[in-house]
Image (cartoon, rainbow, N blue to C red; front, side, top):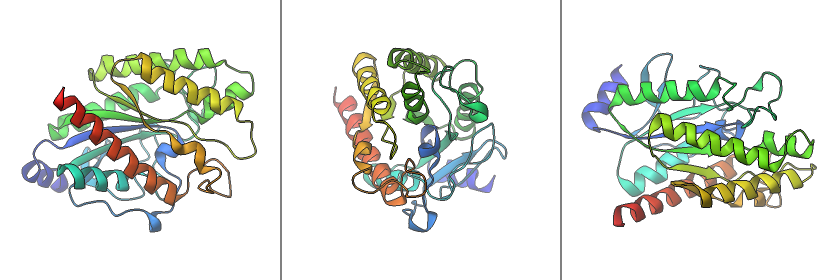
Length: 266
């Protein structure tokens, strides 16, 4: 409650970003190496209905979402965004490791963003609660997801076209519930020692969707280089290291600021 009051009085109407997806959206990095978030950066807890200073581990164990294991991309994102824009920022983290975009690619209890799952509806619930708490404006959705669906394509459990239909449907549902806001996609990276075909298919679909749908943008493409740059964790070969997450957060912020400036000028 105290944090909320400080934010509302000192930084009226923070800019709000919903961060959604699977484990790389959560962040499986190292908080000790994470960028320090600025003092005007916050994250929202649904369970407490309160704002807390943004710091790793980011996120909360609530509504079927999970916090970062240690470090994430979001302090670096907030530092760059706030530093360049001068605005206070609120992160609404809604990520769950292993979650799928489509029902066909759902794996066990990890959940899905398809209409049959609870992740989408819970992300809307959490976002609307955060907006009500702060009177802030929702500036966009940052989406990091696709590894589960890429594996499903490799396993012949779904096609690239099925994934494309599912991703488009998800974006339409978000924009129906939250308004015609930007949907920012981080292209999916690779999985060490696993076939690239499914991951290339997912990346191709993500770029196609950004070209075909209104207000959908790719904000980071170079995740495929994390494999050769040794920015994937040694222990699992799919999660981004903290240096990668720091780079990712900074780059996303820069790209979003560029897009926002272009929209203002139009």
